[in-house]
Length: 207
Image (tube, rainbow, N blue to C red):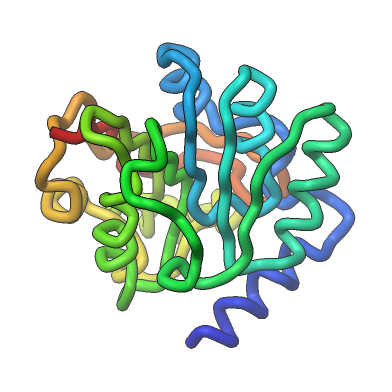
């Protein structure tokens, strides 16, 4: 599973084009624009579009992903935008983050494999300060119908990799939910997120 997961993302990110574009995700942008700058952690950050946007706003940005190819593209994008990001490559349990290190945790289309996705959410929780914010957007359980009509919208092809609002409630049970919904959006993000799809959105404040 781990080797196939890594190969998939290295293959996608090794192309010249940015798979999901270089502009930030709209929901992420909407949410962090409201917050005072601080320390932010981006999970499964890929080619760095969201991390670079946050850095341009003045955030102290840390990111991680399994793909070294994603890191190369992210650092190139950061350099082009004259900002710096601290980018780690590897599996989350092996990475050197500290409890209470971050003010915000951003998970934007962070579709970890089904067998570890809840575990990863629970591993990430201690790294966020009390009163800190989680910003989450990913494809929801209703997305398969949209993907079957239009492959260009992207997203995992299996139900187990998709999210429900109940899963998010359970994974982040010690958070006040400021936003928690599954909703239909029109995506236009690079080569692989184009068209109408169903996403789960969650903004939570750690109690």
